[in-house]
Image (tube, rainbow, N blue to C red; front, side):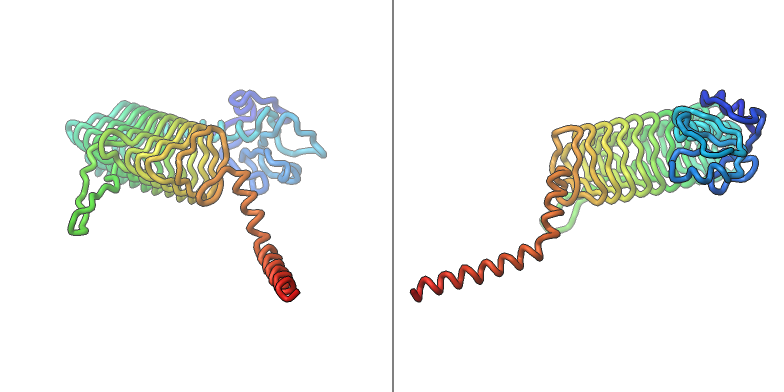
Length: 350
């Protein structure tokens, strides 16, 4: 697909400096872009590349003052990074619109329904009474279980498995290898020290505008639903256990695990490799640094936490600073102990 600078400027409400007819067909990093590519400059560290870049069109911030001439056509916008992201999204949407129809071999149960302009890739499986919404894309080798509902404009990438009765909203993106609706980790200890499996009879509900990274897993509820609410973004390799409820617009980075029945508020930010205990709550707007361990409920909203067990950020940093002084403190304590022993000895012998 080809776009001119004037078309791009119209889409991002930008102002053109240079050739309005300059055309681009793809995207490129400003330091590597070639003729015919669109790039952007947001980080001042890369400004030097602006003057040597071979990109045909470059999006820059309106406030940027040029230090020398630029060969490329420039489009000035209020937020160059946001504008570039918007263009990439539009480009991806246009590509997706061209992907329609049902490839063979694939299996669609007679009782399943597939909406208009949807796509079903080769070797995909769609079970009984499943519903695929208009314009949604089911990529090759995906498995959609019985009675699963997928809304409109959602993308299910290759190899995704969605178990029976789960619900996926509109404009959801689920990346390759994700498993949604597998059994929660429920086993009842028995008198003979064995474990009896507790049936997991609930489902998973993924609301609109959620994105789930590759190879993440979301367990179905024991009863009721595990819920991923509107606008949540999960990174790759995230584990969400049964009956968890994640609030709107929360983001969770890779290799984080959330234990069962925990409720995470809205607008929470959780760093990578964080562990969150079960049956607790995390307040709206909380920020949890990577590799933290959250073991207790966080009641106060909009606070930052760090470490294991996770403490409020200021306390955690004070403890960390103090720990660096422990060797010197140990030395001083031993010197004080010797001094005390000496004073006691002198007093006894006086």
